[in-house]
Length: 544
Image (cartoon, rainbow, N blue to C red):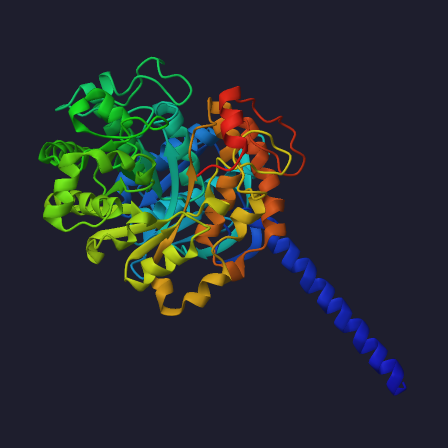
């Protein structure tokens, strides 16, 4: 055999090996149908057939979460689960692994059983989410679901994986909120930022001040006379418990000192004025009654919401603060406190209210306008939202604050999803397609160096000026919520949009089964829900 023939045969063998490796990689990718993509996974030989009646064994630490798992299995798949007394009789084993970090999990599916390992409830809930997804796309043969054998070891890139819903402008009710929480858990999102107060309406019952909802809860963004809608304190407690079961923290936002119109409508003595476009937009910054009123509100809020955090807003106050220029009490406040501008008055206001929150053992979150407010670094988190002002993020980090990244482009879900959509927001020609959401906060964060540790995570926001009903809400959220989840959970180096898109097609079928009116980025099969003309005109153009 000559040398040329030998080299040709070696090339042939290498080509065959590379082809085999390629096919194996494709096989692995196709079998691990989980969004967000797990950190480590390995497909094994064999399959597990899971029947309609199964036994579960769990470490006692996880007993409180068993009911959640049992309800999920029965509700999603018709699988009845009972607590088994012996490991060998169980098809699902839940075990404690103290070496795993918070929220991390291991999921092992072998031909005999499923094992989920975690060090705490949060990790177990994330492991359950992965199992939920695998069962959702499993082959069903009669009463059995066929699962491929796989070993997964997984943890999140970011501790804060958030979604915000604005219900001041349009109200959707607790059943829709619960549905969103279900999908957040499905995708391992863990922070629900709830925007409950603003110009159109106040949606949170405060027992000390009932007119906040009885008067302030009237209306919405398009109709100032719409029937009163709000959440009772029992509603809030029910939703918080529902979220907690799913490893989701609920963070309320009580907006101040701007975006206060609904509260001022209910209690006019609070008003610091506004202008024709934004009447009674601000709380009055120079009256002690304002601060005592809001402190009482925050005390009730802190009792209702177990979260350490209360979001105080602090954004866009300049929309209505010109009224302060003609207010004698505000001018006296400036002289007394040495405040040189309305901006410094805003910051003074937030400092006082942040002190009130600190006295009830809480921490505050504020929008990036408050970066110069001299708030305590150990009790403050800042949300960078103005994508066109990257200097604000730099200031936040330079001053030593922890930050959550939630820029308009690409993480505001009220922005349109493709160029020809007619309803919703754009920034010049900019909008928020699913690929931009997916690629956010990837390897570019490495340029932050040590400051990257100050980034708690990322969050998608749905402002609801254009969201007049549930169909439109679904259309703007789904499937971008899946892309958000992978951007928050999975490091940029591990992401692959083409592989994500392949899995996402399977998830679109799940949306159809659940009656979700989703946007299809592959063919846009559902027409864009129509929005009333007032909203179209105002929000097709740039809006802040």
